[in-house]
Image 1: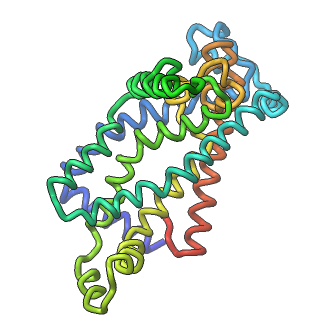
Image 2 (image 1 turned 180 degrees about the vertical axis):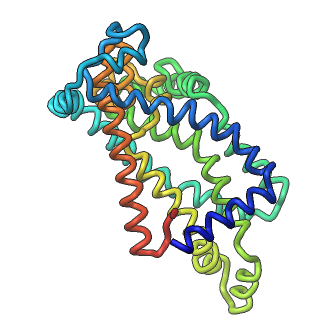
Length: 313
């Protein structure tokens, strides 16, 4: 109790010494409250038979709609559509983690070894620029390349082979999502790992070199251990988002021909809420997604802390 009072006292003394720092927090806290915490009131829809016309406005309608307990969750878990979108989400995100997670680490290490500064900056820019493209732009680029009459298919046809339906073939479409995700997002993660590498003490490399370690051994025994905390953090976040495959990407790329393999939780929520106006079921699914993500992040963090003594808190 005494330690808690002392900590609180130190905190308020620090606030009095640096008032401007805490005043600068006010806009950010206001943003969090308005756009993150206030909307949490809508979670109640998952436990109600929500009728948007039950009140004078949507918020009043939440209060006046009757409680149904976990009936919406029962309806959700008994739905064959739920099983399908859950499996699709896990498969697509599993493929992305398995094939894309190591690539930024490798790219960061390779970029760090480039000694020509101009070429290194050019390479970083080339990798990073696609991150700023919207998914609509990315779709346009890849459709012009891999569409039925795109550049790639025109070359294939010119060689006498049948055109490949990259956007409508259920066996190819998931790989298309993985490939486009990698092209767009790898640069951002590469920059994060590069920043972590620059934080490694240069004396460690010098000591390893004096001991006779070549470049590969320096990377394995100096760079990789230095990157480990960042790798653990990124992996825990990836695991936490295992049910968040990327709504914008799938919504822009998919079509009725590939619904069976590409329909994910987020697009299903969108169709339920905006298409069928089934707000209780869509809210229940969204809440299920958030709870699972929270449990996975906490579990992954605990396992990481126990096995390799690294964690995010």
